[in-house]
Length: 180
Image (cartoon, rainbow, N blue to C red; front, top):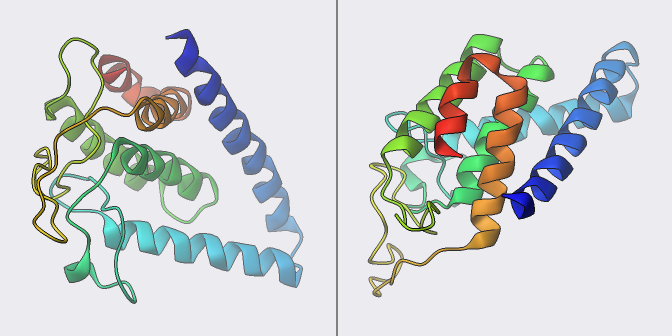
């Protein structure tokens, strides 16, 4: 667990440091600030477009312009974690209401709690289908066989996101703790 605390602390500090700066940007309506806010809103819209509404899991990518029908059929622990802390930041920037951030994160946590994972280590496999949370064993893009594997880096990013959720969304702390 000690190794996971370092990435979690780093992400918490980066996200935490950015929120006060973003709040200050609300008072300063310079062109640069407006441009950054536009990027933030657009980035959040892409996250929404990439997220499966049934599972709350975000796809790895979308080809072209925000085409939900074209979402990739794979995601990773890093992607799932990134979507959760992005919801926290979108909430803190006023892009989405607190209730939407909480609901999106709760749905992802509920799905994470049901995903197959490596029993001995507790780690999640590297690739899941965001539509149903199944472990990817056939690569969707070319039909090649995928042997499920574990990535300590991807699981570290997910652990960092769970730490962010624990601190930023107290009502979901217990769910995040169970997954950690």
